[in-house]
Image (cartoon, rainbow, N blue to C red; front, side):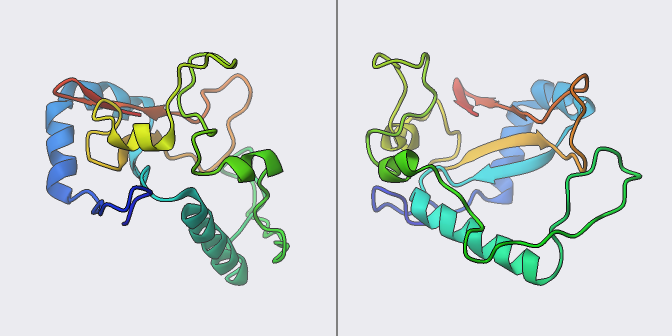
Length: 168
């Protein structure tokens, strides 16, 4: 992948991911039984408009195959296909669209004010404390096939630590 800074960020190798798991054996041991059992690689360095274009393509592909369904509340609920508006399949708030990949878009804000103490996308990409693999977020997420009820645990993500590095 070519990042917003023009640098190449190859997808993490299996060896890199295994090394992260090995260095974080205790955390993995706690999180997997809690349901965090699906590996998620997020290309943090990828320009956001490109990531959106990939998402649009995936939505249209799955829609054409009839593989987009209503949200289920229980595993026993039937899979009910839904129609996708092929013209408006991804909605992005206009204010956000104008800020994509600019210094106006803030990641990891500490508060919602002008003194947010967050980071720009480029700062995130270059911050080794955020990404244990350059340009990539590597983590475990819950593999839920249904929407959790209000009193059930929701979706989430766990972070990796490696030699003082964390990656949300």
